[in-house]
Image 1 (cartoon, rainbow, N blue to C red):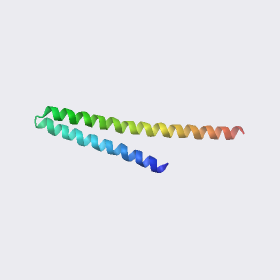
Image 2: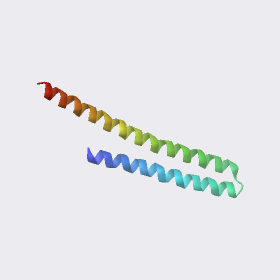
Image 3: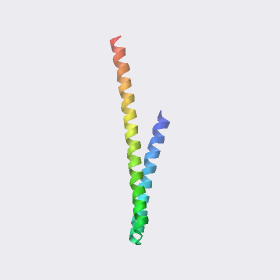
Image 4: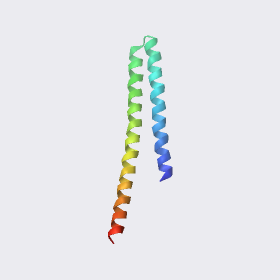
Length: 80
């Protein structure tokens, strides 16, 4: 389980870094007057950012499900 959590954190961090790089590239293209490339880079940067959010939410939901499962087992053990 710990290895999976680290993989999720790596993917999350990867997409955050990629988003920052792509927004920087978009700013560069915009500064050079290439609006089409700036738009494309900005869109890919936004997609990368939202993918990082997706991985964060997915990890939180999985952790919450595991906690609920553990609580259910504890409650079942207390009633027996």
